[in-house]
Length: 509
Image 1 (cartoon, rainbow, N blue to C red):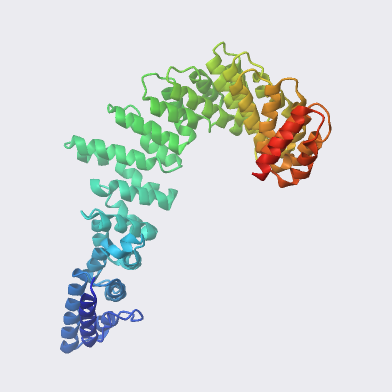
Image 2 (image 1 turned 90 degrees about the horizontal axis):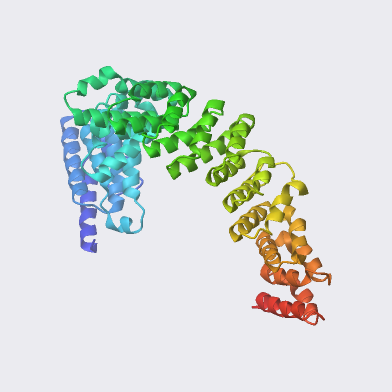
């Protein structure tokens, strides 16, 4: 905007100041036009108010500078506060689409944000205009009105619920109501009743949309009433509705929905994504029936469902270790290596490593890798008790695995454990197999600082493994190792001396 245009807006501001004591351009002004509206009783004050209002509205519609618009927001808010000036409130709504390109480029929206706060502050006085704005054709007005409703939703529950019959508002208002808390479920559930939906029987498209929207909204509530509201639609002729019911029941995760979720998981004709959601959710119940359904699903023809069943079993193990143990053991005994691998993954939810430790010696590499990962997950849990060498042992042994993917899985698991794994891993620096020693180097270097002292001592020991310890010092990159490495460049062992020279170059480099 040119300086000349800003001067023009300043003149308009001064004009508004002279009419009705309204300082539109002064940031400190607190809505003097609003005070005129509240206090003026004479014909003269009414005329002054009208003239000032017209100047104000004309200025805003023309695109006044940000300072002017911010000041205007305060005045409009004062005008709207008594609850008897819908024109002022509607003007505030218009300011939700703040067109200022300068602030847009800065990715800040002071005018729009101020308008949103103002709309929220007086919105309960003008529920209908605000709710209408929530479906406005202008995206800015529509989105920011919804944001304002989120701020004051708890005060407008009844008004919002009354608009759930409006297809344009059902989804956003339902989300806001659900976000308020479980106490609003009683406002939403009646719209999913057969009686209410029957009103749309002559509009099949609207009826289908209403079912889907309302069932999805119910899925945001974690209460029994929500589950009861969606259950009648379990066998709806529309497969999209059936899928929505299963997804919502999975989200609600209430025991009343468990039988339906179990039936869906074991029914190959059910939508795969819904079955996968059911599998993961069943893990929250921790019942024998749910666990059996998940074990059966480990061999499902749909890999996403089978993997989801493994995740569900891991969740079940964290929920009820005793019942999950039996189910996971069944999976580990399967003749199908893919099923055993998923069962090995499921052990990650347990508190003990015994089942995973057995699986880590499975003939199939995929099972061994899954078991190694699971052991690492179990031992690295934040609330885990101090771990013994016996529990870490299977992972250290697995660094010797001939399958690279398995050895790498063990390496990643040991890195998770950190310092507690260092002594056992350092022993492998002297392993007869260079590949095993190499994995030990990688593990120790990725553990980092906690492994330095042990590695440095091994490097200076002169014993088998010193060369690989020197390599590990180079990988660690700790400057404290320089004197050690410098002394080892003259080692009588040529391999150790060469490794020390290379390691020094890495650290200095």
